[in-house]
Image (tube, rainbow, N blue to C red):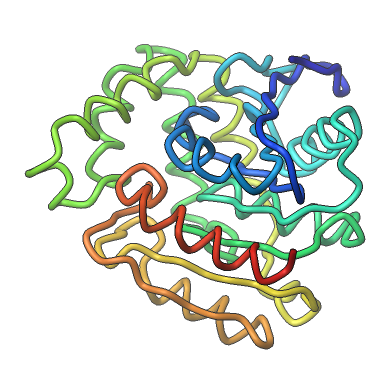
Length: 263
């Protein structure tokens, strides 16, 4: 299914029946990263799976893919799917988008599961690196960028022992377009600082971080846990940044138990 949101068509899937769960994937993959988890969650929940702007089957639109655009896209999908309020689960950029939705339309969020993400904005060096990477992808194509990313998003133990997971990550990332990678990198470079937002969050929140995550390490998760009153922090052993892909059974269990307490 797809829906028009601003200057882009946004693709999404809906599966299952029950309370609504919205699953937001990391950069630069697509909604299929959630497939094993969504299949199991669909026995109890209605699961909404968008491809974020510039990812998968969704269009990129014009200019940087900012968090504001992503948030409006996701809410447009929710409107089209008849979702008034949901549990939002976000990995990496998915977490950034959840913070943006909270600032704009907090009434739409019943609870949040934040996985392999952080609240702070990029510092000057990180911002400059993103912009340089976007320019390089436009000049040279995405192949080198993707190979360079893999050690940052997958745990060392995953790369050493799980060739199937590495191949699946690479396959999803290789579906990303030059325009999509560049636009999303530029959008993340200008995302706002969400640390002040943490103290305003009043819904249940669970935070999960891989113990081998080098992109958003445990220290970042601890900032969110301290900032969101009543939140729960869990460390997932043997996982890097792409926790839902590397530890799908554990993430399924965490989301099911977390969302199930709200049903």
